[in-house]
Length: 412
Ligand code: GDP
Ligand code: CO
Figure (cartoon, helix red, strand yellow):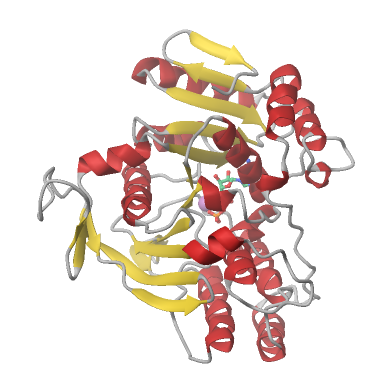
């Protein structure tokens, strides 16, 4: 892959945010332009050859959160995931009257059998899964009904812990409702390219889709930003401007559902509930490592402060064609993102007021923004206990490896 040399645009404390990178070539050949080994850091373009992308794929898990998506679409997404990545399907699909999870599980099993590859599957509402997280030190993830709470963020948290137990060094996320398998491939190559170029053990890559096309009056219109992204990015940039003293448009991926991280970073940050998860990760990184003095002082992590956090943003070539879930869904997502920013202790009064006025004028539901639920970092888990209880109690957890080899409760 050949893409823009990542230029740093902003620095807040130990956090470096890079400007938007563009993809020049999906495939850049197999020899680095400047010598045999290492990435070619040109002055304007960076080349990451196939071999180097592969070296990251082999160490990466790709999480597919899924809730009642069409099976054919999910199957397309799986096929777009590079061969060497470990697939982790975390499903919150209905099990009655039709067991949709069983159908998804079967699709994954078939996919692994035909392609000789590995995957983990688990159902989010498996009581054994809840027990494992409770016992391992994260009872807040479990609701009063005794199972892991509903929500995309919760699913991602669970799957990230599985990726860690499976020994993967990187974790990436792709939605299950994407109609274009080729775009999934491109996202994951973007993850791999930047994770390869990263200068620190604490790096994150966020995707900005080329466009979200929609038919308008019978013609396809390639809309650059969705409504949620537009407002999330605007307020995140206002917050950044407050922190640095300079106006900025550095943040372009506040709502990036498609993103990836090093496991070292994933373990240290908090996951938020539901659709707040993506903007929350950015805010959480700024709060923890942005050198901001906060009232409830979080513990300072010397290792990260010394090495620094890098946030990469890439604009893809492929458009993002996904299931259209309607206006209420968009509004819910916008509210979740705005709540995250609004309730951050890093957000100053002026930005809070700007958010409130936006909520009043642009959203149907103008009621108060509830604080976002978030969970402690994965590093607080007792990994041995988690693995042990999962193996014993998580009835839906399964490791599938190669034809005919599938093991209940196993992770590696
Ligand atoms: P959007 O594309 O950001 O508008 O949001 P979607 O509704 O498409 O959700 C993104 C992804 O998260 C999709 O693959 C959903 O199926 C999945 N998802 C949504 N809610 C949940 C949930 O509660 N648990 C899990 N595991 N996945 C979910
Ligand atoms: Co979607």
